[in-house]
Length: 191
Ligand code: ADP
Ligand code: MG
Ligand code: MG
Image: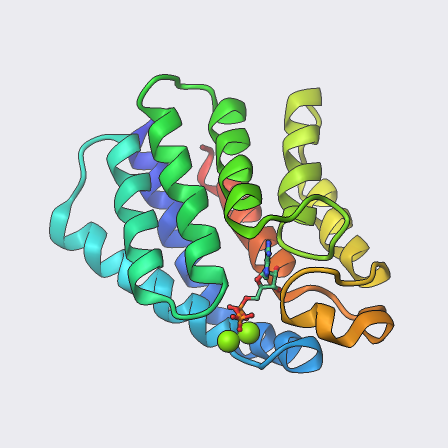
């Protein structure tokens, strides 16, 4: 895994989140508190500043700085969750070059931090099918879009959206959508 491609990935992700900031918050307004776009835009913009200031030399260091920045700069649930993902990815990247192993470590980090499993209408419902497709050798933009779209059909049992119970059905999960951007930009960056 190439450090320049990983930096490019973080830049593209930041751009995508910022372009879709209003949309992410609108999704969160329907089943949460309406701040997911703000949280992610602030967090990723802080990541860009930190990467520019520190210019980390290895993939593990890029992930570590990204994770630490998200944990410290994002107040909402998504900060510690994405933060745990990147910090776990950094640890894994210290010992392997395998994208599959690294993303799997990221998912494990989210699951551990959020005490959630697939099917609870969270960002995990993007991460898990994406990793499954990557393992099967058929990860594409379509796989990502399908995973994200599926969150519309399920009931939230974790996070703020779970307060709505059945009424969360029919809405996309905002964190699943932002995770969709993460994986789309991973493909674009050629990581
Ligand atoms: P907050 O809910 O604190 O306002 P955000 O709006 O930034 O935080 O993030 C909400 C997103 O976080 C949800 O859409 C969901 O994808 C994700 N999320 C919330 N709780 C959990 C959890 N326990 N495990 C995994 N993901 C979660
Ligand atoms: Mg929110
Ligand atoms: Mg909030």
